[in-house]
Length: 459
Image 1 (cartoon, helix red, strand yellow):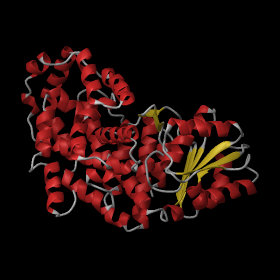
Image 2 (cartoon, helix red, strand yellow):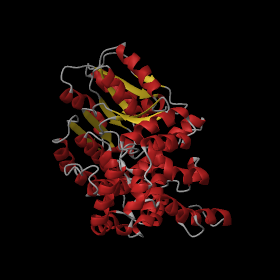
Image 3 (cartoon, one colour):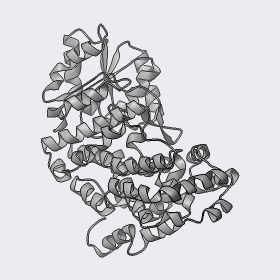
Image 4 (cartoon, rainbow, N blue to C red):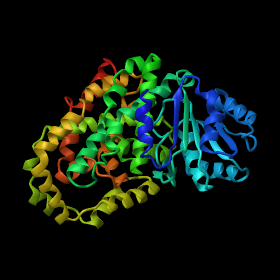
């Protein structure tokens, strides 16, 4: 664990002042709380599972130090808690009934719900992490579903984060796998940021980029050891997730850690909610989304985009009204369609702007292609890494059949205004042919389907 690097990064962070990670650190929770919230009292927030893992100990320590404002808030551990705005409102109501700085004990969903609820009641908060399962511990904003649409809602990151390695290594292996899927997705997210920066859609933040990308290969380099519960591999994973969150905090945006792979994931999460399907771990969906994005990049990089017929693309470019109609027709969940229209139109460019962007692409493609090739890993290699970490790599394992996966390459672009490779293939007019190649018998997803059909393994 590079504590010096973490502490240096915190100097540029807007919200988090203290990150304490190590063996036995749970015993220091009252000390850390006092340093970050002098003179304040605390209210512990957990679910029935995390309360037994660490919440009870946190509450007891804070109580012994005279720092508790009342009884802990313990949410049900089953059925699985979902990061829905309704749950935020429910926790907000409970927080308003008692004073105290929220100290959430848990990981992804619990942290996001508490983060936004604490913000809505006007209080900072502290997080005690229990698993290396996601990158949101130190992130700006909370990923919350409201009215069927998943979005990152603005709210401060925790003032303090504490994680005891003795607890992290005892977390179920599937939680490490979900964290691994989330972290591995930074490879394609980085490629998308390079793309957006080169085409002048969104510049790379030089403060945030190295926090995620400089050590990404090291953090994700030992998936088999992670699956086996190796302490160092878990520590490396948690460090990467923390640094990704700090990078998002510095940028006040999820861009440093989220690209096209998260567009796939968020689309599937919102579809599952709309269809009444069971929730699947976020990191698992991001992992499959990473494969989808990386495979698409391979088809893009196989082309010479200096030869795009700019005049033809501009002549055939749809109007805003035509785009809106197409987006509405593409989504069969009304709430999702409404929000997708809003996000898509927010990034709409007219034919003159398209001409400028495609001319920029033509001039910069050779250098851009080289930078993307250096950033990315082959989709097949990423699949092997995910498998070694215990992540699913067959879309069917997360409830996404071939037809939905194929449609996702068009629909995922519509749910966020952020520029990614999904926008590039749409603007250059190569989307359909790339999809055909991916799902052909020899294509990435075509080979995967053939393996399933022949009983030779899963993709």
